[in-house]
Image (cartoon, rainbow over all chains, first blue to last red; front, side):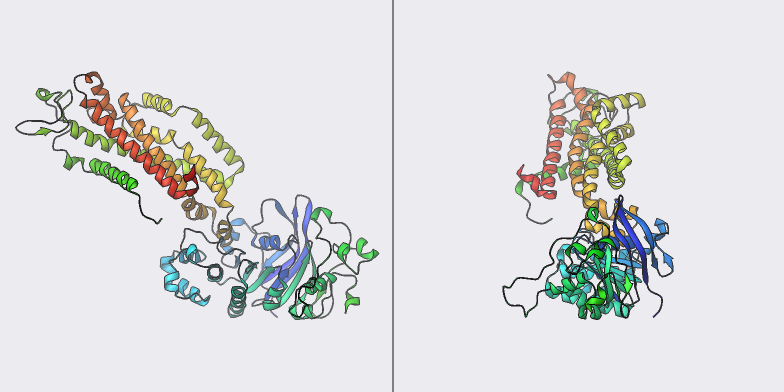
Length: 317
Length: 277
């Protein structure tokens, strides 16, 4: 394997003095789809924003590095960062219709990523629209977002994100606002373009179904830390962290008895203010013992290309 | 914008077009020179005609054709209003955008300056400045333009604060747009509607200010005609020559009314929620 397209190492983010993302690390190779899964508030979205270096003012970067190729983007000036955004890294969002300027034509918005007016880039933009599966691109190119459906808007955003051939694409819940059939089409499209263009995709989601669909590898986040990471198939087949196991168990299945109780994880995610010593999942974990509440489990290798942060990982095999 | 225009707005638009046409085509429409005096023909009533020419709206105290003077006066009114609204819109919108973008100290400084400006009576400030700089067309435009920008700033500031939080601004940042591009290409077009509504209501006010200042002798200078100065000159003859004050006054009234009604209509189109109020 070549050097990773994106390598995040020991990244920590804080709001005031409260550390909300605690030393997470992962890397993504070219053409690979890497999913970050977790519940709301576990820190996955601000991790994505930290990679783009567009954190809300309240959140501080307190440690760790983010390497894009050979460049550490935590240490370069803002001007250089502007040149990287949209060129070497792009992002797509949860609500495609809201992420497009209502008054600009979609062609102009795609051309913006190329830093050139549409008049000069029209053929390239049109070709890109065709590539993301928009029918009649010659007409669509001059339309405005309100004339397009949500799924088409997401395709437009993907076109805008990929037209400059970025090294990495961050997709923050790209299908949450779409209905299930469109969701599958968009995921297929992302997967296909990632492979074709050798783009590394970081997919932020809370949906295990989405992960199973397109991710090569997955990192499960819980309360600001990575609980477990590894190849998608291996993790789905044999989770080595109780949280992952419970998440997988809570997916409803067609074989479930109708109207039976859905599996849930008891309790709730601790807020950053409640983070204490030990494993943050301990208060909800069926395997928790005294060691879990006193000693923080380190993320350690377990099996090929797999990491876990659980004292009891061996017992789960 | 879609939908059919109501008959009322068609009348308003037609009248406004008429005023613009009158101002732009004054050279063609007036068959007398507005500056040519003819003391033998002074203070003739409307409808007077001679062997060589006719005075549809009568003549003033120096025998000049009132119709011609009103047509050229419309040009002065509209020119001053257009230019001063442009100046204040430019200054006001820019400051509002900057305050809304940077927030913090920039916003505090700009918005407190706006509050200060709004607490000074604009007409008084205008009179003072003209008195210091000396009257003239350019002074008039600058004075009106530079005293009337705070309302645009308030609107632009409030709208910018709202628009910057929308996801597409963030998306533009993620796409690598710099702040200047985001402000001008993504925020400005999206706050242009409310700014245009303010601009039309200010437009009517500017016409009144121009007339008021010219009436006081601080605006367009004689012998060039302006509705305000025509009325000021006609004031002393009001018992013998009513047409000197009535016609320019009526023109002023109808124009400002049309502009304001147009502004109301525009506001309803831009912000349909305000219609019920």
